[in-house]
Image 1 (spheres, helix red, strand yellow):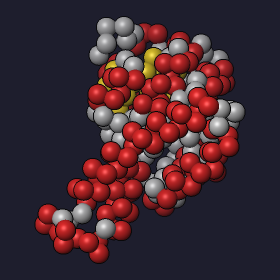
Image 2 (cartoon, rainbow, N blue to C red; image 1 turned 135 degrees about the horizontal axis):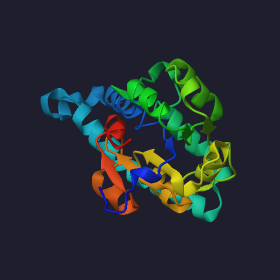
Image 3 (cartoon, helix red, strand yellow; image 1 turned 90 degrees about the vertical axis):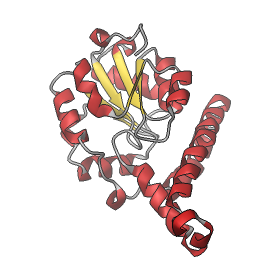
Image 4 (cartoon, rainbow, N blue to C red; image 1 turned 180 degrees about the horizontal axis):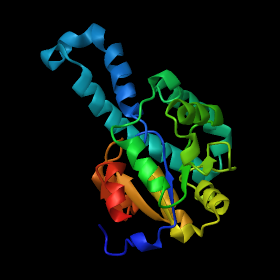
Length: 226
């Protein structure tokens, strides 16, 4: 934990979905491994899954870099349909593939009793609604920012500022929780505190470099701070 992280400041918590609440990275790994099965003799123990997982992890940093670049150039609205298609191929937009990570529901229920919660995601509106419905999370979040909510999306701070306004909480009293540098950069840019989780695509080194105030294995470690 960085010495400047202050849980007492937190009056609202904002969550990313993929890799933070939902186990969509494993869905992607399984789909990629299935596509490699014709070449399974090339892999140790004829199992392409470990290699597929390494590819997923390696590909995530360039993807986040691409999102950051198009945001800085102001092309996010123009190119977001392409980005969404990539995410759909990765399995993140199919509700039947979505499962919450272990312990997430109980953790969110506990936190909901302490502070207001919100979603800040780069998913589309329909996909986000389907996720919340399927996982019985609708009543836990007072604000939901999707890729269409603001003109610019993460890593731009606009979605976080919008969510803070909806919750009537100052951005500096919000906590952004996510698994990638895009989540952390957006939180930092908005003036919020940030927590990176290691249950998704981001590595500890990347999340720390992006400015995360705290790194946790997953969000089940959050209640001890609140």
